[in-house]
Length: 242
Image (cartoon, rainbow, N blue to C red; front, side, top):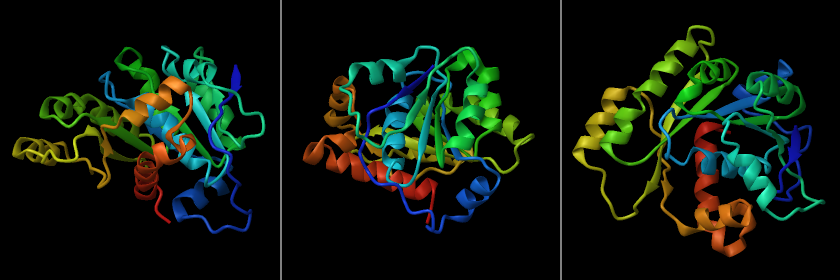
């Protein structure tokens, strides 16, 4: 089933726009630049990041959003929110019978596709999805235990790289406290994981929860969501450099 999300009404970039090499290569192959948001550990904020990243990407092109999580949180979010018929929006692919096929259907029709990957119960599907992607973003809570719990996801990325050696990945710290310094234990754990960490983190902000309740993204909340929208755009600039 295909559902139209209601995110931000922004103009598409002109066809003459110069894309970064990674995106240009994907588009030359008739395939969207595909970003998976994945962590086999639950409770890391994966779906919240997926929705807001897809919202931010509408500023840069046509966006597809694949809901591969059988819990269907993205569809609930879409159904809960108000409809904006005139908005330029991502398209939600939410049929959970074959998420990989949904992804392949989405890629030729969009400039970007964001995939909200399933939890650990569907590890085989997650690995198949990663093989089709250009980048995997791994949200983790800022604690050593949560970082260690992400090792299974990192191992899966390495398996996917055997088929897709160009697959890139990075950790993004989620729900960080602005005045809380990263502990030495955190720094040591990150170094041992051997995966890059984005400079930008997602702070613990009430506006993310408010956006979910309203069925919108932080980009639609005006001044209330400006700081959150700025950090989402900073994340996108790190993942998709110009």
